[in-house]
Each structure stands twice: as C-alpha cells, then as structure tokens.
Length: 91
Image 1 (cartoon, helix red, strand yellow):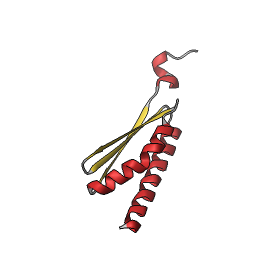
Image 2 (image 1 turned 60 degrees about the horizontal axis):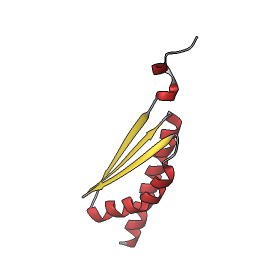
Image 3 (image 1 turned 45 degrees about the vertical axis):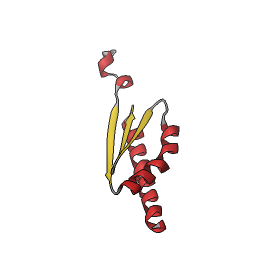
Image 4 (image 1 turned 180 degrees about the vertical axis):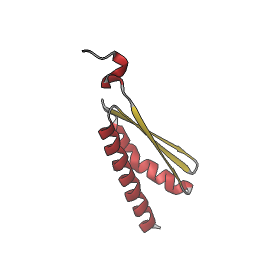
C-alpha cells in the first residue's frame, strides 16, 4: 500500500524559533559569533536563519526530521551559552 504524498515524510518540515533578549551589545556579539556556523548549517536537511534587531536575537531552525531539529536546537543553545559566558568574562 502506498501512502498519499501528503502523508509521506519527504514533505514534512519541523521548525523551532529561539528568541534571546539582552542588551544590544551582547545580542550583537552573539549574532556575529553565530553567523559563520549558520552559513555552514544551511544544508539539505535543515536551514538556519538568524535575525538581529535592537535587543533581540532570533534563531529560526527548520529541519526535515525531528532528530536533526533537536540536534541543531541543542547545538545553538550551547553556542549561545558559550558566547554569553565569554562576553561576561571579557566585561
């Protein structure tokens, strides 16, 4: 039995949005730290979109499967934490 196209996993898209609000200088520094990684992540199974406006940094992650989305959300949260820790140490 073949499933209709709308029920196959080839057309599933799962997304997550992470929003971080802090002082403008900190969100700007985190944004700049994440940019190189976001460029690498744009691949076949996932896409990353970073937005920085004033005090808000938004990370949008879209993937074709839950395990990829979960891995990328975890990775980006760790990268944000690492960047934030470095910023605090430098202050």
